[in-house]
Image 1 (cartoon, rainbow, N blue to C red):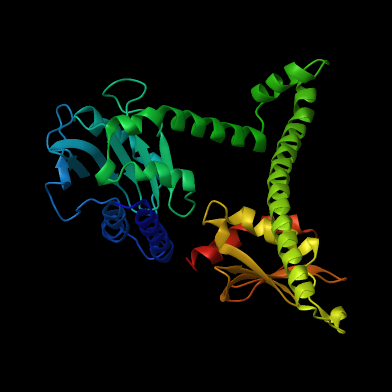
Image 2: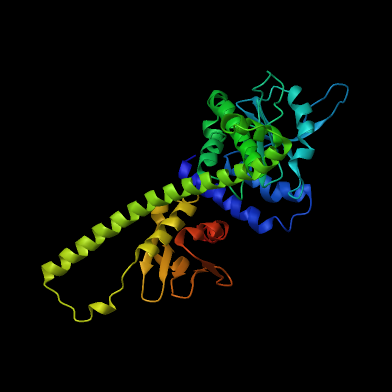
Length: 361
């Protein structure tokens, strides 16, 4: 399967999840509306019971006739077990059930899903025993380019056990480290705080000192993240300004070459650094959603337009600067207006901006 075609299909499934998630009330409805189309997008014939096997029998100990929702067979070999739940159910309630199934079959991978979230498991810690933690977790409403690349490995045409397992361990632990740090940065535990203090704090680590130190860790983490975002924004801004300067130079040369003169130069549209910074911020927000070369801008006298595919009909947002206040207008159903102080503040509306673009691609 062509990768571009695969990406397009996964994005369509993501839109489908968003459209249907509030209307699906049962497991069967979730299977039919979301889960089967997902595996169809991976290239499997979901209507071929020899390839995509419904109600696969997996006997567990003295329990006979235990059934897994689906099993995927590739080249006559069982490869993947799938346990499906309703979209309104949390997956953590059911992973032990899939764990039992995994140990009784020759499957190398197992997937726990509710149609929106997919957890991928294998046996990294102990052969033929499903790990307690997934090596890959994908939320179709928050999927990133790196995750799409890993998901692509599960497509039927290129499915290869060694290729997937070679990166599974790294994926698993990088993901868990990220979750651990996110928890500790948001609400530091006493043990984590003591560890940090042991490297930088010379006083006694009393209970009061530990409690006073916890908000400092959160503040430092937030500042670190902000600085990283600012650095990326600065790089994007420098690129944008460079492109704009090249464009301005070319325009100037064209005007000189044509010997054109204008007496109303005060009415020319001038794109300000703040507008370019706003544009760069939007590009930064969308970099994991689409190819950012598709994000363009068009300036006019009253506002600054950020567009998709250089199409005025597909504008994403408009940026307004004034002496009293700055705000953006979103191209959503209500044309919501949101205030900001500096262009980088637009980043706090990232979820809304991403949502608008998802509806346009």
